[in-house]
Image (cartoon, rainbow, N blue to C red; front, side, top):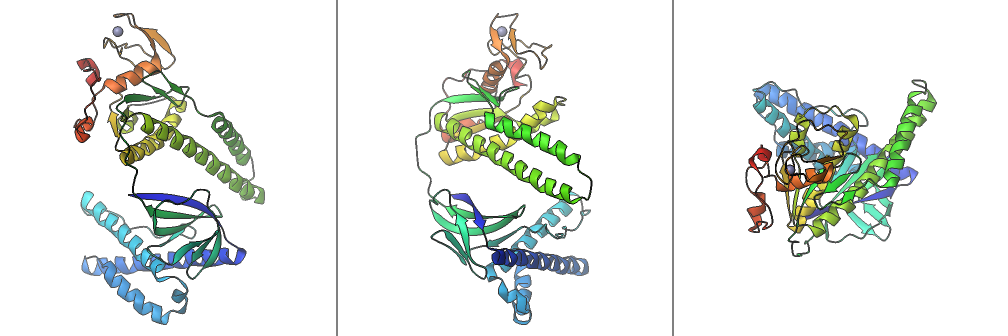
Length: 386
Ligand SMILES: [Zn+2]
């Protein structure tokens, strides 16, 4: 299995110049390879293969001095990216019956990473040795467990990062024989079908509020002014920080859930987005929800647990005990009593129980994949299944 480790790099001024120069040279190479492919396609109607481009590049390297200053794998990776862009282009042509735009050229600053695909990099103490660039200071906040495969150097708002793709053998742990339904909370982050409410951490709420204030402060700055440029960088930094804090919280939460529950059901966001939602706060929380579900899914896959997505239709409106549908349910109703079976419901907990009891949207019983169907799952009344 592959895992990614991301660390901050602290290049010296000279190394930064070299990194920037490498990015810029790779960008130019990328664009010129695209031009070659476009011409070839227009003339012959066929694609120019990567191997052919590789041959051209090898010839060019003999004559063009500056290409020698970049590691051969980094150059090769540029060709891989061009190939990928072209594969997507051909796919679009097929989907749209021949009417797709050519792959886009990378504008200045839009080519923001380079990759050493196999070698040319090594961690030596607190430094990352990059062939043709140098020994760059590296802050390794967690130890790498596994074998290094690829090394990607990325520039994000004037900061440099390294992402290692690492091959590792996952620990085989028994899958917890417990199941849970999870609903997006209205005021909280999520509510579990066992009644547990998971709140957004206070530090995250605080940073988000600061970000809103700072964005307002930025919009008051004069366009084109130096102050505005500075403010923009500062807002982008805070934005990054908020996004990191959110990721961190979601990583920890998804880890906890996967460690405790073997069968997890969540709302299918794609279906949810088709339902018109005029509540802004709710749509923002839904945006973070997609990221959380993807963390949950890959962690579950690693651990051998199951995540199933269910159609969220009526999950808030139906009584999880008798199946009655409360048609006049609005977003402001937090608690309600079922007129048929008289059960008192907390809105979100009731919804998460319904999520747990709803069949998945995948069309197959995902629970059954590992041959471990849950035993406590009740058959959902038919009104709820649609
Ligand atoms: Zn009821």
